[in-house]
Image 1: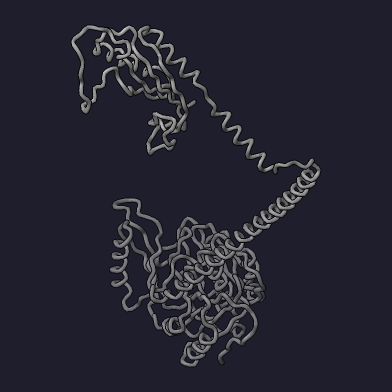
Image 2: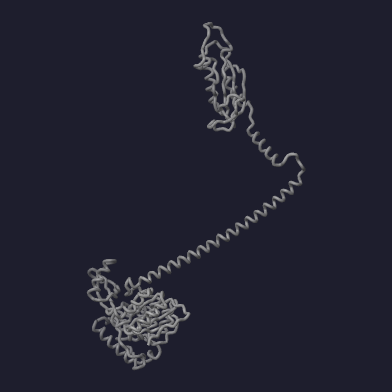
Amino acid sequence: MISLPKSNSKRIDTRVLLIAAERAILYLGSGRRLTDSYEFPANDAGWTAFARYLQDAPGTPTHVVVDVVEEEYRQDTIPHVRGADRRGVLARKYSRLFRGTPYTLALTQGREREGRRDDRVLLTALTKPENVEPWITELVNHQTPLIGIYSLPVLSSALLPKLKATAANVLIVSVQQASGLRQTFFRDRQLKISRLAQMPRLGSVPYANTVVAELGKLRRYLNSLALISRDSPLAIYVLSHGTLLSELEAHCRNSEAEQYFLVDNQQLAEQLGISGRFTSAYSDAIFSQLVASKPPREHYAQTSETRYFKLYRAKVGLFAASMLLLIGSAGWGAIRFIEAVGLKQQALDATQKAAFYRERFEMARRGLPQTAVDARAIETAVGVAGTLAARKDSPVSMMRLVGTELANLPPVIVNELRWFQTSNPAQSNADEPNTPSVGSGPYLHYAVGVLAAHLDPFDGDYRAAIAAVDALADKLRTQEHIYAVEVLSYPLDLRSANTMSGTASATTDPTGAEFTLKVVLAGR
């Protein structure tokens, strides 16, 4: 009879499929707690029912645990290599030792102490893949995220720390509902071999006698393989619950060669941090819960069989990243909104203050006496007056500069000094337009003085007169604040367009040595 899951409102996000030779048990759970179990026979009807269940409940990540007789173990050594070289060496080992099965596994168990120091490995394989292939095919066909295919004996190694099994020789014995009596041997906490014995239905025969008889068979087998250390007894840990443990307590006697430890499944579950009640003599639920909470890295699954789990993880990762982005955006938006509210409040406060002070200003302005001129016009006039006061000037500065140099030249007699201010230093007459040209100078305004003078006495030597004028101009150019000095006219007109004439008499002409200078003083 096939037991199918009934539709309910429970949230299912974890599944463990325990595969045996004659049946498979499906455990369903939420988080890391398994709550329901359903059984499927290993025949066409069971596979069809399992496919129908997967069609109704797709997408849930699933662990697969295999517990079959056809699991083989080989101790071997391989060179200490990594990567592709290691995979190549193992592929050759698998093809020689385990033909016709894709489900192979290598467990590294240390290195040789001498020679090349090769790696010691335990090679395992499911030598009858048809035990698991129908179930795996249905999982892949329904695009179920398959996390891994795990060996129950390999999974048993996770129990050693919780059982505090530190002896050199350890045997873990469990009664499995799906398969039978599982006996897994560890030497120095490393898996060496495991044996599965068929058992009668619980309650049909004295179970404790059958268990002890199977333990005796395994003990003789281990002795034949020389796997047991002679320096330490065999520590046997039996996992069960209730009546069976009571029966075993009467049959299991400690000796120098064997020591028995009867472990209650409920206490073991508590040590493993597994919640819930475990009141069955069978340990299937313990191992299923163990793989759901802490799966080992080593498993039999092929890459093609776990591709949908990789897609599932990518989808979960993208969803988590999207949620983080959404939460971050919402948080950032909330912060900016709070800042905007604060700025809005500040703007309202500033508006209210401006209105308050504007009102007070108008009240004060209305209290002032009436004037003929508007206050804004007065403000403009004051600004213009300040600008004019800052730029006012007089010819005193220019007269002081020019007078200092004329004092050193007694023959120069000043006839006239015209002075004006301008913004164009090229301007020579106050009547010319006062418009600065492009690149006219680095200053905003200039003081221009036009000096008309003559040489007295003058003996008719124009060459000497011209030299005296040039000397005066050069001397003025060296003075501070002098922007430019230009000779507008010499005592003798030297322009090429004019005609020179005169007489040979030596009569002195006091008015013949007149000249004109333009002196530009930079604005300050």
